[in-house]
Length: 308
Image (tube, rainbow, N blue to C red; front, side, top):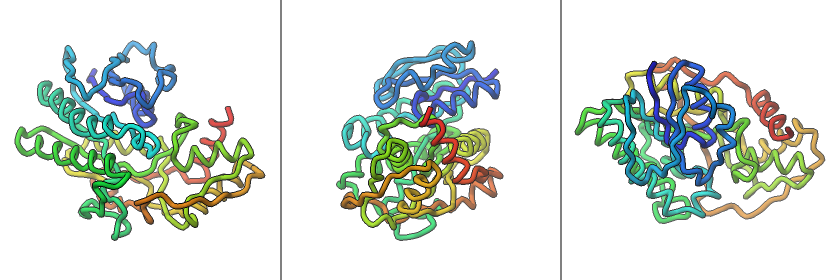
């Protein structure tokens, strides 16, 4: 029985990943300091005999006893609401946290995976975005703390791969949604759903023409798992290549939730990306992976979960 250490294992993607790995027969060690998550997200797996929780900030050194086969570094504030409030912690977990997680992987001769992000592409001038695109990032802008934390983390991960021959993976994760997201997460899907089911206007920034891609959580976890088991060492985009305008998403959620909410337009935030669409050719060819859950089906499940 192999053991996986997941930093940020109580977060949205991390908690789903922990549950998935337990079902696959892995032992799971979850490391989290609950800065942007709560213990409720792992309540369903807390009593699983294969699960262990370590309450710890991975930005500080950590020693873990026993064998570890995989280290999955998913710790980081990920919502603009969170990293704007926690800029120093975001930079620290991207730099010090990644360094500490890589150190654990090296000491255990474990496979290492970094949860990177589509934000490394910034406000892209190329669409869809392939892994070969270097990005268009304002390093001193309001989103810079998250963008540059992840870009540095990628550079550090590849440095360990080259200098120490560590078996590394980099998942560039695009927008992911589903049950388990926080009500006040700050991102479009939970914001719109909470506003729609409570009858409040849905807040759309700018004219809503900016685009995003939305991947349902079960698809994302399957992609992460396939990358974890693969022999791919460089970055791989994981996301849904379907592109949707934010205004289109708002109207779709109003319709699917049978809400009477209207739409309220607000000023577009600084450096908000105009487009976001992954080129997943690499994931298709190397991992034999692509999303299966349609947006309507995924949103229906997510809306039902938020209603409950």
